Image 1 (tube, helix red, strand yellow):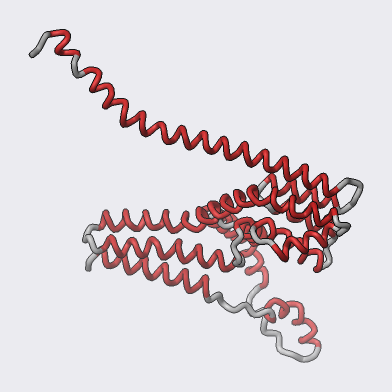
Image 2 (cartoon, helix red, strand yellow):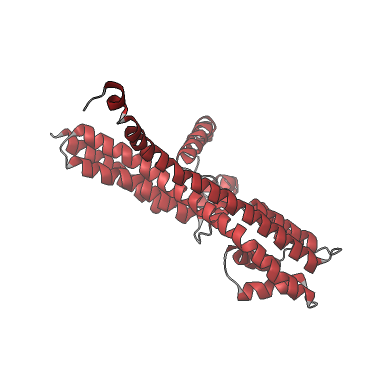
Length: 307
């Protein structure tokens, strides 16, 4: 029997089994959890005791012995696949601006983690070499495991850059509205109704939190604790402090907008300097040897008088 076909069949079967187990989870009946607690009452009423057909100590001992091992193994697999607990994963998805749940992200990640190695492994089978098939399979495993977390990190970085760019504009839009004798939350609601972007989305979430029962300061404080951008966290903490009063909020917002613009200007200047250096380095690498050849070409003629 061909070894490559056996390897491909085993890999495809394992991938299909894991995918089915992840998508179609086995049903867990809640009644079985309560049966041990009702056996005594059922026996007093004349019912049949059928749950303790085997010693209860067996299942408890298995859980206590193998439970920590399974927990550690699951945590290790989650670290390798770039998955954390549901709360942390949902926070990172909000930081990236993705409108998906943690379960949807895990299913997407699992599809890539299983589909990429199987697809590239089947592509390697076309070459007719077991070594290339194994190499393609390993390359697909690396690509499949890293693709979704890398895209999530890049989305967080892009959204953080947009936050830094939009914060001065939003602060400047809030100032005249509060100057016209409007409260902070009313001004925020008007900006949310008129604007767009990641900062506006965060402020919209703050309004939803307030409508759900949060206090104004607590809603902005939650935004500050969840955002991945430090400048946005400072701005939300500033709004949380402003809800308590005691400051000239319109002028403070204008000053905060000016400070944010200055920070953004310095960041753009540093980025431009780095890009200029990255543009000069290829010229030095490719042009320096050519210039050196032009300079050294007449040296033999000057030294030896070669015609």
